[in-house]
Every structure is written in structure tokens, then in C-alpha cells.
Image (cartoon, rainbow, N blue to C red; front, side):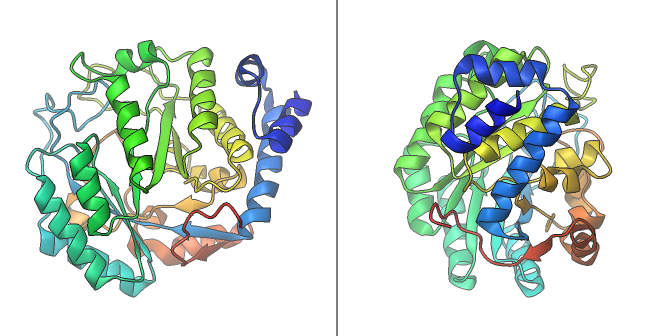
Length: 347
């Protein structure tokens, strides 16, 4: 098994059966070897720095009805909010003063976020923060919308592919959502010159080891600049509320495998992992992650962005907790890197 880890580090790819074998059969010693190897690769590329991204969750409205997500349109118990342009700019301004040089604007697929409105917001932020990277994560949009936002100054776009296997995707989404469309959006983003992020949940209801192996094969082919991997966490107002959370250990293994596959990728230690484990952020970094995304959203709305239960939005997961974050990183031999942290394959 350890020979497969070494092969992945050397070649950046494995055969489908080899991915499956690692996912199904990796014991704690193999997982630790994968983490140690992935950590060494990340250190070679990025040193001891961990990039920070300032996350602004701009709207909790969503037109979709994904079976796992608390923002789903059928969740009438959720108190919704939508940040105004001034609130978003103020959050980024506070983040910039604190040292952030990347801002991530994330939200549900809010019908009120018209293409032109987002374009104006991006132009404003690009003009005010010319030294900072702007990342959008606003779901599936038209090619024209993606083009306009890119031309306005957006640098990156995060759109998890969710599931490379069509049947697995269908188990998590309503019939009016299409895995084919999701993949087409990712291809469009790449064509338009975005640094593009994909990724998936680990342990989603009905997900199999074969499904995860298919995800790895997709990431190997697509080679996104960013990869988000976190455990599935249930939300009490969804049809999948009674499903158990995903395995932290398997999530960490997948994170390590992706680091070995994509040594230059920007991979966050996700909030979901930190919400599942008290030391999830640190364990993610020690497994090969090199990004954390503290929350810059106004404190009074953070709990309303309830994509899953018990989501962390304070302490080291918040922008106002940078001192705590720095201390926790220092305890494991890392430091905050305040650079933009653009993807560079020649690092």
C-alpha cells in the first residue's frame, strides 16, 4: 500500500483499481504515511506558510433544492439574509486592513444576484483592492455571466463538482439539477481563464469507495488549481438529516492523495473538517492542506449561513480570530502567509 503512495507522489496518477484499493484498504499506518508524504510535498512547494482567504458569505438565498444543504429552497425554517454592496465592501475593507489579500465571495444561487449586479460588485472590489485576488463561489451560471465577471476582475472561481459519478450526483440533488451541466460549467470556467476550484464531500449518503475513486480520476484529468475536500455533515432541515457524518480519517486520506496527485494545488483545511474535529484544521494542514478560510462575514449573519449543523464561524475560523489561528498554526510548526497565494506550477 505504501508503494502506491510513493507511486502517486512520483507519477501524479494511479490506475483506477489502485485508487480504489487505497480508499478501501488503507489502515491508520498507511493513512499516516500518506499524510507524512503529502506534508513533505506541500512543504517543498510552499514552505511553512499557510495562505489565508477572507470568506464573505454574501447570501443565504438559493434557488436549488439540494438534498444535503441547509440553504435548499425548501428549508422554510432558515432565516435568510442578503448582504448589500456596502456591507460586502466593508467586510473586505476590514479584512484588507487585517492583512488578507484574497477575498472569497460565496453564496447560494440567489436569483436576486443578477449578472450585472455581481459584475458591478467585482469591478468595485477590483478597483478598491488592486493588490488582492477576488474569488467567486456563486454556483452554476451562464457562460456570459462567467465571462463578464472574469472581465470585471474576478481571478478564481470555486465550484465543487460534488460527484464525478452521475448516479452518486443524482442521489444528492433534485431531478432538475444536472451533473453534466455542473461539469460543463467547470470546463467553461477553465476556458475563460479562471483559476478553477473543484472538489467533493466525503461520506455523503450512498457514496461508495467506487464513487470516491471516480472523483480522484476526475481530479487527475481536470487538474483544478484549487480542490476543496470536506466531510459530509448533516443539516437538520434536510431530507438527509438522519445520515451520519462522513469519516474524518477518510477525508484526511483523500486530502493527502490529492496533494500527491496535484502538488501545486491550493487545498484548504475546510471549515467542515474543523467543525467535525476540534483539531480538524491542524490535521488537514498536516495531511497536506495549505489554505485556511477565516470568515469575514458580519457576525450577526454567520449562523444563518447554515449549510450544515454546528458550522464553526468564530474563534480561529473567523477573521477576528487571526491571533488564535496564528497560535494554533505555530503549535504545529506553521505560520500564516498573507500573500495572495496564486496558483503557480513552477513553485
